[in-house]
Length: 221
Image 1: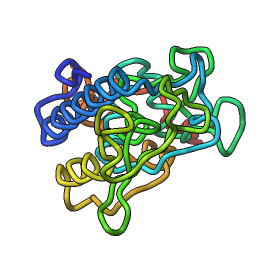
Image 2: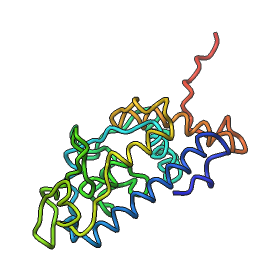
Image 3: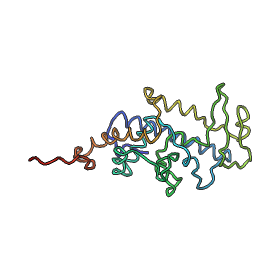
Image 4: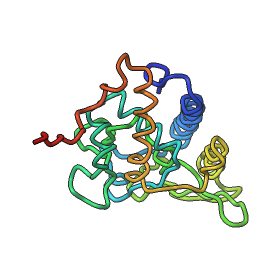
C-alpha cells in the first residue's frame, strides 16, 4: 500500500506508512510459515469472511478508508454518509467481502492484521504458552492439525507467527487509541470523513471536490 499518492503530509500518513510496514512483516511471516509447515487454505475458500466481521483499531480503519478512497472515491463518499453493509444482506458477513474478487476480499491489499494472520498464527494462553490449530477448513500436508508449547516447531517445522506479538506492535503505533476497537463497518465509517478531509486538502478546489450533498435551499417569496 502506497499512501504517498493520495495523502498529503500529515501524522496520519506517517502512521499509515508504519502500518504498511507492519502488514508487510506479517505477510512475510505468514508466507514463510505456509511454505515450511505445509498448512494452507483450500482454493477459493472464504468461510472466514462469510461468518465473521472483525473488530479493528482506528488506524486500521483509516488504512481501509484511504485504500477505498484511492480505488473508488464516489464509494468512499457514500460510505462516509451512509455507512457499510454486506453485499449479500447478511449481518454476519464482512461488508467488504466480495465473492467476485480474488481472495473474496474487495480490500485485500489493505485488509486488517487479524485477516492477514487468521488461520496461520499462534495464540498465547494465560501462562504465555503458544498454541496453534489448523483451521477447520484448512489443509495440512503433514496431517498434523494442532500443537502447543515446545511441540510447535517440531510438529510444523517452524514456529508460527504469534497474533499477540503483532497485536502489541500495532497497538504501540497509536497508544491512545489502542483500546478503541470497533466493529469494522462502524470503524471505517468513522474514519472515512477524516481521510477524505486530508485528501481534499490537496485538491485544486477542495471545497468542491466531493459529491453534491448540500440540501436544496427554498426560494424566497
